[in-house]
Amino acid sequence: MVNSSLPVVNGYIDGYNVYRPIQKKAQLTRDAALLHFAWCNYCKLVERLAVLEFGSCRIGWVKLFTACARGGVKRLLE
Image (cartoon, rainbow, N blue to C red; front, side, top):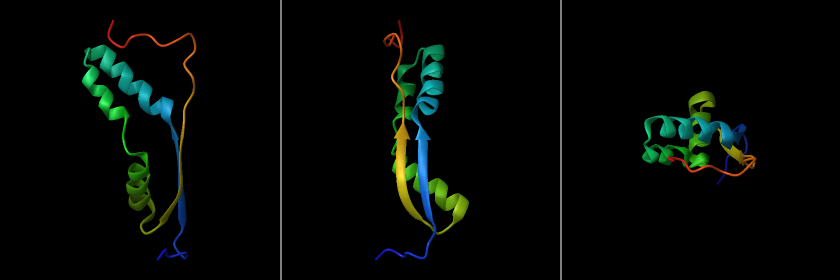
């Protein structure tokens, strides 16, 4: 049963700002294996961060936002 008296926490994730620094690091080091860090369980991430910040709480929404790449996508390690 859900405790409705707990505060609700929503998570909004800017996917581009998560992925792009990891992609840049992978290009710099020429290590495509680093890209696995960009694909995580965002629901679990929001849950853990919310508990650290607010203690007991309920998770409402977890929304991931992203944008289309302009001009196509280049190969990662050309």
